[in-house]
Length: 233
Image 1 (tube, rainbow, N blue to C red):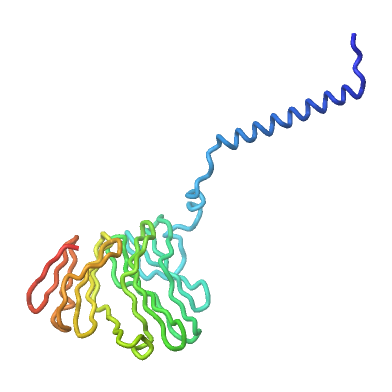
Image 2 (cartoon, rainbow, N blue to C red):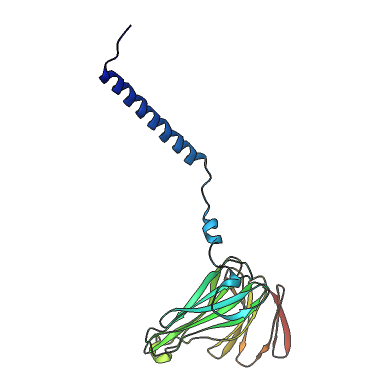
């Protein structure tokens, strides 16, 4: 019978220990490989929902809420969501870089889960800008539909005249009907849910009745010079 020395026994134990360790490591790798990973949405589900989100509510309906929070000095953030359990989405922010000026967030119009939000900011001591966005409370998708500087004509490029947003109507598909006035004329503009624009009418300022703008479904109508005009947005 072959006799085993102490060194041989220790060596055999060491080999078995290493083999066991390797087997455990392989098993852990296999478990990690087949175990489903936690999706990002699981972490998102842990974040505050629309009904519990704190802040000033500029708008609240069954399908939409616009919430404003001041999270930094002279900076106001607007969030949009579907109450009560929808995810909260950042829509944009207004700011005042001068620390002595004004800034604001306003809701210009809404329908369904879409809201048109205006952000007015003070960029420096000479003036600022106004940015208007259309946002969906379902997924947080937004697009810009109007921009205007508040510096005044002397600060702008020579020969450039800014338009003024005179009227806005929103539908539940994320589309809009706008009335913009500039250079002595008023334009009626249709805006698609992707932000694309098309001029539907143009007339001398004061000819188009701004209060007549309507958007029922995809059908737009307005009065130009006493005549009702229609178009599909």
